[in-house]
Image 1 (cartoon, rainbow, N blue to C red):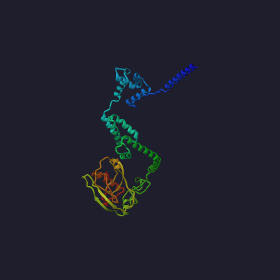
Image 2 (cartoon, one colour):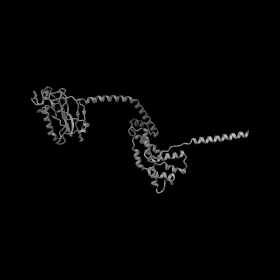
Image 3 (cartoon, rainbow, N blue to C red):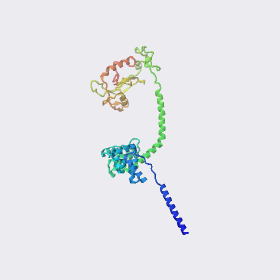
Image 4 (cartoon, one colour):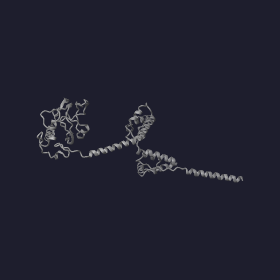
Length: 406
């Protein structure tokens, strides 16, 4: 009986050992190792992965060099073979293979250029805080800072390169905080800002949709045909070139080319006289080829509102539509419009414009008109006079009878 029990115990122990061996072999880890891809990783990262793979798979030391060779791409193996020639890669140990490739693929960079690149790295538009600090850490690897200085430099360069002013203002409230605390504050503010933008997103989209609809309506109106106007008869169904009164004689001024109701002289005779309050000489001509600029402070006018007379001019050989103003002291144009037609430099001026309320407006500069344009100006005046748009007077009531634009 005792003999039989002892035999059963022995069988149970053998069964337990067998189960343990089976269980142990079933827990063996198999790792799929990706070969070196020089477009997506550097050699140092690849070798770190390879070392981990060797440890997980328990590769024997005498086989590790051959496993390393098998993990290389055809292009990299050819490079290794060329670097070792006339020796063969299969005859070398793992350390020799690693050092040969590392010296060729990742030579140690110079410290000063590496620090220059690190110190000048700024956060890019749309770049997250985590991506930004990760890039800074990668750039700092080759800067050769000691461990204490590294965190200080990372913090300082990180803060100086931030784009968000609100985050900067918050960080400036702290006194000499470390890198970890700096990252905590910036990440929290970035997360809060993103949450607020998500909440407001629907409202902003609604505003944009409304604005887009308004723009569509505005474009529709702008694409509609502009109303016609004839300066010969004041008609609104044709242009002056096709007016049937093109050869008619005006009953008021006896000139050919328009009728009385469109006569400029007739309209002027019905208006109250213009009284000029103050016209002052505000700038001297710099040389004999320039026209001096006058400043018109204010005027009283009893003129009824009339549509502006628009004429097409060529400035710097570019078409430009401007309002005719024979009483203007100067012609004013925004700098944006001026740059569309000319790249010439404007000159500093002491001219100060006054609004009817007495407010001052200081121009960015002036372009004075050379006397070389006199002939062209006179020809244009003759044309306007013949068409009845303007009429000749002996003495102008204005500071400047005509304002040429150059």
